[in-house]
Image (spheres, rainbow, N blue to C red):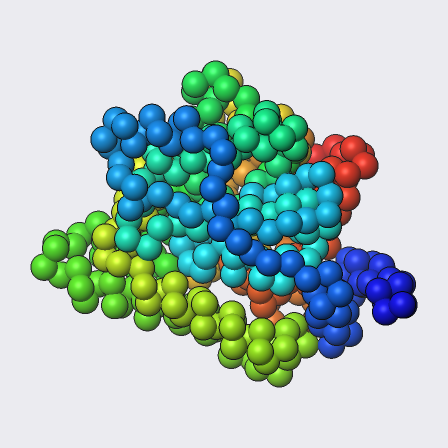
Length: 371
């Protein structure tokens, strides 16, 4: 039978992904697994909404600022909640990791609203989703966060600690975390040193009259960030089929194109409202969680993270204060182009070994001392 005949090859895929550079064989096996074990991403309405309803009832946020949750069925008992960066949506952020994440359990993609954003409402929605999974379904989730999404995760954990709550989590991952404005814009430099900083700084100086041009410039910068990774078409053909690449590029560009000026401004305001990790370096507020944590920085973060990033400094120098069961790793590519900020698409096989090892340790309960 076809499924059984592919089983040895599929089991080899995981082993190859841990130790091997990218090759066409990876794509062949991944697409074969997708055909043999198909899945669909569908809208998901959490059954728990108490925290969300409280924020909406208070009038500080509106329904247009609600994030949408999408669900993909998995095969294990440990679900993953994905929080993406500014762009693309969470569903595209882990496009090439979906098959891997499904092996651990269901995946819940949290996609930010296009026409607004509320930090309070987002934290409430995450409260509800984690409560539903951990308390109602008895499936403590892993929160898999990327860039801006890692900042949201840190802020959510900080608020939970302030409130005396300890969310039921199986683990957390933070890929290229951006948790405050100072991570991308130095407060002392005359102008931003990073491409993302140049995109965001005008939002702190704009007026409604200048916003239309500002959002268009931001779209161009985010498109450049994506296209910079997509420019090597030959290399990309070893990662995904041309159909997959076309779908991915279309989805990313649609997200960039359809974020409204209000949505963009409110996402930036959320970043501005987050507390920088060094600001809560205190025994009264730390650790954020005792759950296992994996923190990954790319070898080349220069397009996004400022050299003086407070979040990177705090997590690289004192990560065990924030996450006692945490470890920090640098992701590099010895076989080609340097790994860029949050490059989970174009450098997926460089990120996969530490991510795979982290999930395996969660499964076996064998967590080594934090590095």
